[in-house]
Amino acid sequence: MLKATMFNSLHDLKVHAYALARIIEKEPAWARQYAENLWSQSPSPTPEGAGATRVATPVDPRLGAVDGDWLRRAKASPLPPVSPDRSLPGFAATPEQTEQFTKALDNIANNFQQGLVNFGAQFAQRQKDQDDEAKDDADGDEEKTGGGRDKFHAIMSLDFKRRLPTIEDHDYDLDNYDMMFDSTIECYSHGGRKVTAMDKLHLYSSGFKDGSTRKRVYDNMFRKATRAKRLPKEAGLIMNELRAELRLYIKETKMQRQVRLDGEFDALSQGAMSHADFQTLCCPN
Image 1 (cartoon, rainbow, N blue to C red):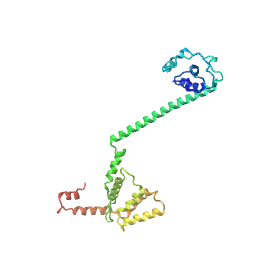
Image 2: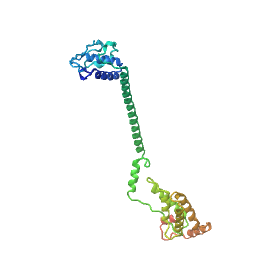
Image 3: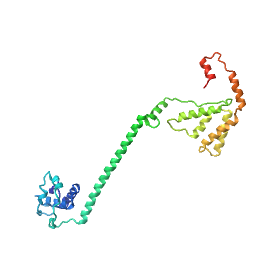
Image 4: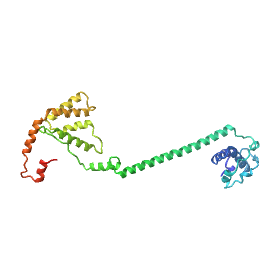
């Protein structure tokens, strides 16, 4: 509660009275009257003049006694009448000062309200993000949630590695080699960093034996692309060109393939093999 003895001057008391009026939605005139009444009722001498006494101002009965119940009565009381002789000699608040103080209070109230709005929006967004994360965890999608990635990396920490396929020059089935190579690369890329086109181009030659025809074709095309400065920008395009080029060097005509398959079929014999082993040879599909 406000007491006149807490302030060194009437001006300081009026500043706090104006702030109080702003909070309880009263006019500045009410605050000025309230401050002057408190100042005049204070028994202690005013510090503004040595030995001077306060100017007695008639107390408006509607303000009531200054006690613990003053706020309730202040909100309920109407605006007291203001007369020119209410102000003290030697001090008068100009309209400009009053307007500046009112604007300052308005800015404080607006900033406080905007801060509450921003805090509420941030809290709502944080709550929404937490709900979305909880929903993803419940779905168990290993590719979207962090828990799924952790499980995948835990399995990879067992050092489970799949070897890249190999092919000899006497094997004409390059399509099967390409299929197995692409499948292995997809397994390595799943759940982790994607293998780049340049890395795939380097790994593709690992299935060719050193000194083989396919290895020499690969080395020639890689050297040619390097000199033309096509790598690593055009690694994917060079990979497609390499696969087409390899099929021009070691290839099998339709007649040769038919003869080879007929010979393999005629050579099928169970012999000492078990039924399961023989079935994998004659019925691979």
